[in-house]
Length: 287
Picture 1 (cartoon, rainbow, N blue to C red):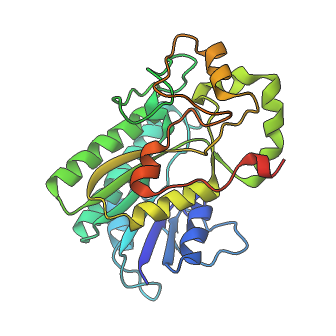
Picture 2: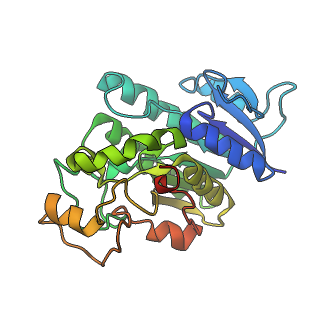
């Protein structure tokens, strides 16, 4: 049984990841500033300030009677979106914390690290900066449009060099789309009335349970080095066909292949191929 440290395990995606890993037989320690509100919070909890390298280094080795080793790290803790804090505060929290996790994992001899990058590095909002083509994939250079996204781009660049220094290291960045819980789906039918309100990320989303699946598959992958994957649901948040939505709202953006029905415009082809990622959940099952 591997012991996996999950930073931000008390958050929306973090809670789903903790449940997925525990249900798959892993031992899990939740490293966060606050305990999980999940009534079924089965993971060990240790309060950690990720901006403090010393605390992170200790947390990724052992903590008294809680645990005595960490085999892998899932790093999800962050200010989760632009505009929650000031730009400088967002950058000052997220980027140094990620550096601390990467560096402490390296110092502890942990060579299996998965962390939350973001769909924002693809150039969101697309309404201000349309993508080069649909479906949007990992083939073009990141182009952050916000300080939050800039931080994620810096984290990906850091990961590239950490793995250059250590060829045995695996650092997988998951570019999660907008994370949703089942309780969020009641609002989805209303998007049909205002499709432009969700065009900013090409009508994408990811069910937290499928996001958790992507994390587990990444931990179990034999990939080495730095890799980044778009992680989204198999469909959009809309009932209107995806090709029709793109034609109306992004008429100048070409398609590199056809899309069927309400298929996602955020390509998960690479995650399917290399991680065997297959989304199992859709908002349509709950509305």
